[in-house]
Length: 469
Ligand code: ZN
Image 1 (spheres, rainbow, N blue to C red):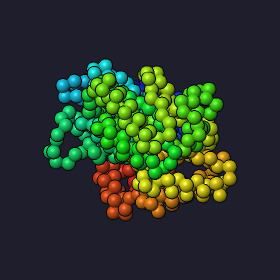
Image 2 (image 1 turned 90 degrees about the vertical axis):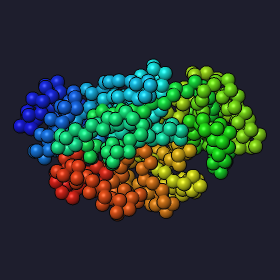
Image 3 (image 1 turned 120 degrees about the horizontal axis):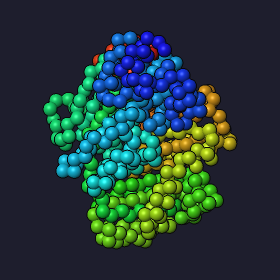
Image 4 (image 1 turned 120 degrees about the vertical axis):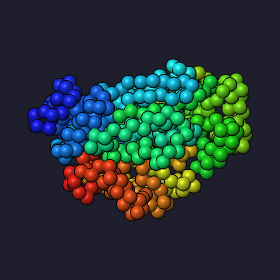
C-alpha cells in the first residue's frame, strides 16, 4: 500500500478501503465487462471522512472518481490506474422526513427506490423515477441531473432539490442543506453541483423536495398510425387531462416488436403491427372521477382518429406489466448486442425526419445494423439503441458521427438526460458554444484548481493532474 493509501486508511479504517482483487472484481459501470482499474476503492462513512480523504488527495494531486450506483450511460464513472474511487455506498441513511415542510434529508449513497418507498410510507411522493431505480443512487441522480419518466409533470432532478451538501476538492464542506423552498440569498450554490458529474465536488447529502402522493393512477397503452398524430394526441390528452398527465412514453414499432417478441415475457397487450405505441399515465386526486375523465379523453381521441387501438390497465398488476415493456432495457440489449445507446433532444416536429435520416445512413453503411427508438417524447427526448455488430473504436466513432452530425443539422442536444462523461466529450461542442465551454472551464479551475476530481470527464483539462486523460 502506498503512502497516500496508508494515510487514507487511518481516516476510513480498514473496512473503508478495498484493494487488489476487491477492486479488480468490480466494474465502473453496469455495461462494462472489464474490472475497475483504480488503485483502491475508498468507502467513507461520513461527510467528515470524505472531507479528510479529499484534503489528502488535494495536497498530493491524487485523482478521485466518485462512484454511486454505476448505472450511468456516459462513462462518467470510468477510472484508470492512477485514480482512486470514492464510493458513497456506506453513506445511505435517510436522516429525516419532514411531512409538514414536505422534505426529506438523505445521504447521497441511498438508492432512489429506497427514497421513493420512504416518501410513500409517510403519504408523500418523491417523483423522480427511472428504470434503474433499484440501483441508482440519489448522489448519482444529482450529479447527472437525471431525468426519467415523470419529467413531463415534475421536471428533472434539479427541480426535486431543496438543498445539497458537497465537499470541494480541497476538503471544504459546502453545506447548502436549507429545507426551504424559497431562498434568494445570493448565488444558488447547490446548482453548481447538480449535473456536474463529479467534476466540481463530491455530493454527500441532500434535502429532497416531496410532493403530495397522488390518490389516483390511470395508465393506458395506445397505438398510433402516423408520427404527426403523436404530437396531436399529446396536445389533445394534455389539455383534456387538465395538467394531470404524468408520463407520455413513446415506443417506435421496432422497440415494441423486439421487446414483445413471441409474447412469452410480456404478453401482447396490443398487436405489434402499429407504427407507434404510447404508454401514458395520469395521476390525480379522485380515482372514480379521474378514471372517467381519462377514459373519455381516450374515447374522444379514438373518435377523432388519433388512435387506432388502446388498452387501459385495470389493476396495479396490469399497470406494472405495461411499464415492464417500456422498462425492459435488458431484453432490448439482448436483442441488440453489442449495443450503443444515445440520448438526444430535438424539436418534436423534426424527430420523424431525423430518425428516418439516421436509419437510412446506418443501413447504407451496415446493412445488418439494427436500431430501436423510444423515449420521453413529451420532453422532446428520445433514446436510440443501435447495434452494427461491433463496438470497435473506429466503428463506434463512425456511428456516433452519423447520429450527431444529423442532430447538429436540426440544432438538437447530444445528451438530454445522461450527461457527457467520457463518451460524449468530443460532441459537447455541438450543443454548447465556445463561450459556454470557457465558463465551464473557469468554474472547474476555481473549484478544483489541481484538477483531481473526475479528471477528463465532460471536457479535457488544460493543466493539473489528469491532463492526459
Ligand atoms: Zn430516459
